[in-house]
Amino acid sequence: MNRMLASISIGGAASATMLMFGSPLTAAAQPAAQLRRCEDSPWLDVNFEANRHIRIPVIVNGVHTMGLLDSGASRTVIDAAFARRIGLQTTSGYRAHGVTDAISGKIARAVSISAGKLELPPLDAAVMDLGDLARVARQPVDVIIGHELFLQGIVDLDLPNGRLRITPGGCGAEEMGGVSLPLIRLDSSYAIKVSLEGRPPAPLALDLGSNVALYFSRDYAERVSLLDGRRISSAASMGAEGVDIAQAVTVRDIEIAGIFLTRVPALIPARWKLPAVGVVGLPVLRRFRLQVDFARKKVKMVADETAAARSFARDRSGLNAIARDDHLQVLHVAENSPADRAGLKVGDRISLLNGQAVPSALRSHASPISHQPEGTKVHLTRADGKTFTLTLADYF
Image (cartoon, rainbow, N blue to C red):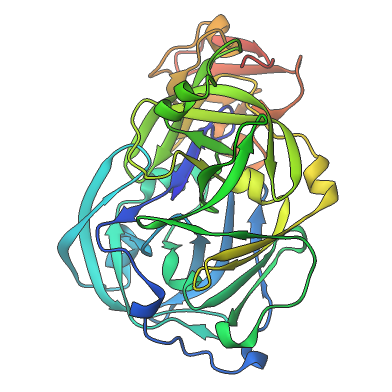
């Protein structure tokens, strides 16, 4: 669930908020949502930031905010500061595991959440500090909407056109072409089969909350020789469980729903807590229109030809940083990357990007500076006045 690359504007930190809770939710265990008629299924506009997050307007206990949609979260999560602001009462009581580590925290009981005309049944939400995720995302993360929404019917996610709707299960979904894949239940996650460089298909957890294209466990990567004969570097990613440093590689191609995608960035963390051997995230899934049906354990995928042909955005700086009040704090410098060659170190405080103060520079770039073409010069000024020049280049 919502694991983010820690590349805020330079190289950021990947984010994947994949949270698996000890008591998995099931379709049968959920009360019926307050959405009964098929005509009550209008399209919702989605605030979709390419390769970042899917945000939808929601109402939490009567308070309007934006929620991050996350098929990788087995339970909805509310930011601790937002919970206090709207007066939610919390008790201790949950333990979950993310991609790389375990997490414990509090529960808010009988929380009311609605999205458009869909009112979810009162639910027990996890409450945790999402502040670092918000800093990586460059905007507030008040609530992460997890499996409770997906269990209410068919989630029709038309990312190419920036819209979403939830159709009650009995209504059926809009007919469309594409490929229907089974959803494989693995503990509290749902996975689909993906073929990696011609190998037999493997079950990868479906995670719309992750802005990492692919994650793999180290055991799987070693079993299929994923680290052999290719450039390897590293990257920092941010999740609810904190920062993790993973190996970074480029996968030559993958086949998903009959479509081949090439030169796909992938991360391999040192620790792995998921039952699936890997995770497929939003940078891959955004290339399709999706009809996700948890109850019937299937997903229909229709490739958007323009999006499928587009190259994957990739970090070319090797500098992973998180935004603080008036600066970027360096979390990680990838080995043999432009940032490494320029002499930047973990803990450095960057006050200027290309001569602009950090807050202004971040606001003026819709996508990370580090995703610009090879050969682009990026000038960074450290808090002590020393300037570093990075020449962007592919390094893994």
